[in-house]
Image (cartoon, rainbow, N blue to C red; front, side):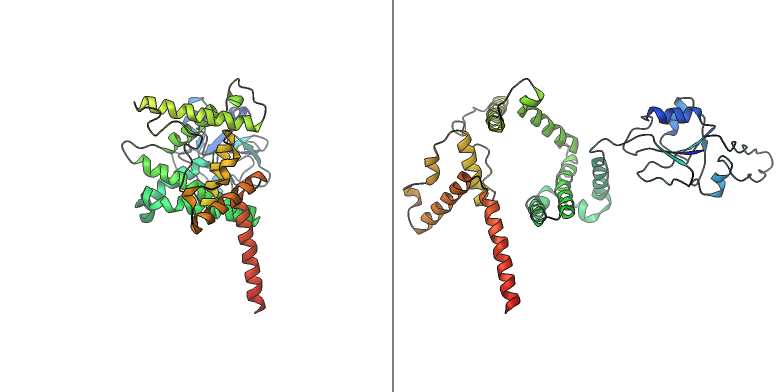
Length: 342
């Protein structure tokens, strides 16, 4: 029988399953194309193999398979190995990949399999090549790519709201590309970082901030997780300041609102400020902005009313940004319906 031994290009050569090694050790013949990455591992394991061009369906290789056609007479001075018996097992190692050619009657054996997330290696390799070979990709900088850090997440959110799961999956890929692209740009600097540094950083942060998962802390529910998260963030900020030799309160005493990015849309900003304040037990009355002299006048009154609407949304357990987006989509549909009826 012909056994097609498939391997993953994302798994180091030699890291094969036990059934794969058994098949290799007991086979009458092991065939592989020139330069196959598993060949050094086979040699180290003492497994004899033949280098063979083509695929199991090309004539030259068919002659080496069990029950294959009788090979032609070799040139003078050379010998051709006889065909294995029809009932012998021959292992063919195609080039590593996800979809090897499996002829009729052959058996497919997966010698190595990807762990979840292994295909991210393909994205990193593709980005490396684009950075070198594509003129547009090669000239990009953090600054030129910055607009996409905003645009791509919004496109992903739009796809999510549309209910098109395939479109959402594709847009998530565009978001992921921004991370890999920026890390690739940074890796070219002598003091830069790599995609592995980015991954290591977020893994370490998640482990630190989830002591109830990775440590011995017990929590009563999601609200306590939130509070622990904020406390750990404050401790991290203090530690960073101490390492830098900067007083921890150089920018004023610690605040529950530290780290809230003011570059986000205003509704989302107001909602995040209120959520942070609520977790720190700030009185809800402050969120109503009553009689604030800094907001005097018509414009201030309007801003105060908008902020109060955010408060109402939060108290109702709704996200004001998403609520306004839903209203905007409804308005869009109404306008289009009106336009069609003109």
